[in-house]
Length: 451
Image (cartoon, rainbow, N blue to C red; front, side, top):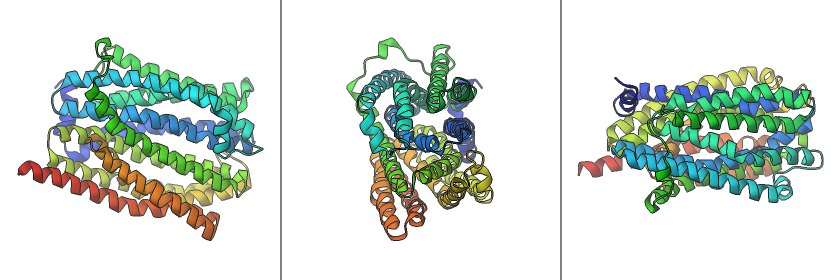
């Protein structure tokens, strides 16, 4: 069986649990490496024993999230259409969609850079930076905005590779980028004395390396699809399909960024070191986050392909297997966080105050892990099926109608302790809602087909 046939077999026939693991685990391994993009900067900045620079990295993080949100518009929208086109046997449309995805990524990144730099001071103020963190946050944010093309390209091109079932190829850019970042961080931060600016520069160069690696995979013919100049002009149909799925995906991540900013602004009220403590806890939690995101991303091409092939029975099996796998793994991760929280936090800071607060935060927010994986899997499945209204509805209810109101209410009633419990409560409710909704939609499609 050729490599191409093996990829199609995984999408169409392989046992659901095995297929979820086969596509998900390589992505998780890559994403665990990708976690180092977040952790490496935090680790090396922590070695300077300057908790205000540590807080600044956390305050600036939503800028990275917003860049990824815009990348997600193209990556998720184009990836969904590519997978469905493959399932329907239309490889030409898949190639055209891939090329349009490349073009949109370049255009969007230029817009982010120009607008972001023009409004830099206002953006940093809105992020919650105060007197002790404002300059550091400006320095880090400016460089991240300047390198938007590399961050967005690295993220989007990995998604496009994943859409054709090339899970292993899709992580090459992430792995290479992270290795480069790890090597350059101490050089720029300490040897060249650039401190927080050095961390940002290393991150951008790492992303640039990852983006180039993904482009080379297409250029050398190792992918099933290949961008072409003859497809550079989009059709109205392809643009409509990309934006129909992609815009809700972007709004999902933007809403998450808004919630993150609200969270940081509330945390600043308890002191800027509290922001540093929450930032370290959230970065460590991202180890668990990338596990469920990896499984969800691995499930997306499976659901999209089988939706295109109208194999709804297999889609239900994939959903059930995926939820079981991701929830079991996350329970194990949660146990590790609960037992070793102070030791994990101590890797990034020596401040007793930050370690104590951060450990308490981690042991509270870790309870999201067994539930949020099923939510993520449901959202990406809706996007893969070309049904983004359901994915966006889940996020809208989750972030605006549940999490942010709970965040404000519990902070008002119970202070900091109440604030950090808002997210676990939200995720428990939304797991039940999202999985039930996805199962109902799949069953409805199946019933309509039988009729």
